[in-house]
Image (tube, helix red, strand yellow):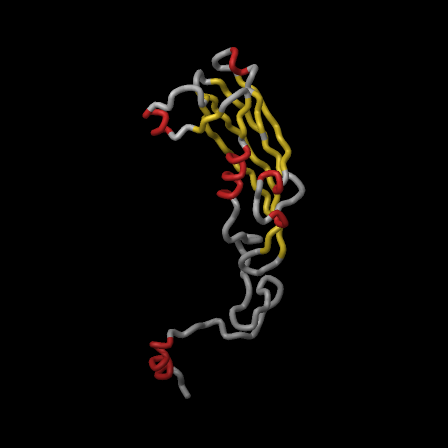
Length: 170
């Protein structure tokens, strides 16, 4: 995913929109089976003098399992990103090192690593099909969104089991 900036170099403040379609394989994502067909990357490059700012959004679809009920689900991600790049020809000053700028050389900026990092950081760790998902019964394993079970849902702390016997009428 390379952006040609030849036209941007001519005028300070000029911008150039870009749009890419990429697959999980092209981005080097490990678990390629969970990603839907392709991802769309769109944004804009702005010439800020010696620095080029790249900002945009990534649109991706993932096939996952709910972490509560284990049902299959689809997660739609819209991931914003923004990063600044500087030509490698210039000397790296201490100010640039503090700002942690990215460097490029030539007439193209490769944003493949930027896109991969942002997608990996936005991937949900524990995806849920809905905020109201009740999950699985910890005793019998039935999906509580679909059925109810007769399991005893009250848990007694084993340290208080003796006190519970005092309260029972038997």
